[in-house]
Structures are given as structure tokens and as C-alpha cells.
Image 1 (tube, rainbow, N blue to C red):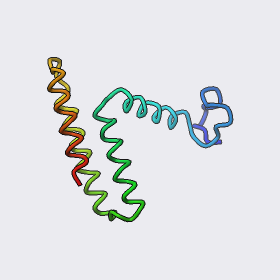
Image 2: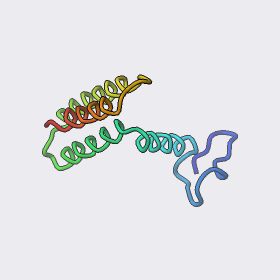
Image 3: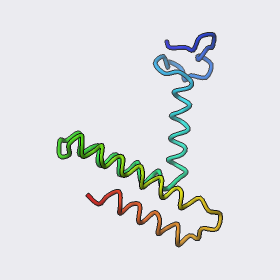
Length: 107
């Protein structure tokens, strides 16, 4: 069992969990919540899985995937910045998501 020095992970860990620390489990939970709550992250994750599958099936090279992933992360971040305003209309929000889907899935 991996533990931080002087700290017990047993009380916060699910029964039988011996491989991950509380910090690792917490980070994963925060990431999953972000994906559930933010549409831009959902779109990005879906596209990432699609392109990662292409990499695993050897229909895309590692270099092509890395280039796509870097560009996709930049597009996701750009969309998130556009969505930060308090007065964004639903129509503009829908347009931003639509453009993000299109840009991430163009290959």
C-alpha cells in the first residue's frame, strides 16, 4: 500500500484500494467532475478518445496524434476563455461549442 509519510490513506480510500493514494483519487475525482460540468471539456474528451483510438489502431502516427492533441488543447482553452464572461448568451455559447466540435473533429 502506498502512503504518504505520517498519513493514513485507509479511512478515505475505498475498501480494498491499495494502489492509489488519496491525492491521486481526489485529483481524478476533480477532473471527472470538471468533465461532467463543463461542455467544452466533454467535447474535448470525446474527440481525444476518438483520435487516441486511431493512434492505437495505427491509422495515425504518434507525431500526428501529438500535433493534434496540442492543437486540440489550445482550441479547448480558447473556447473556455471565450466562455468566461458573465453576459454570454445561450446562442453565443452554442456557437462556441459548435465551432469547437468542428475544429476538434476536422481530420
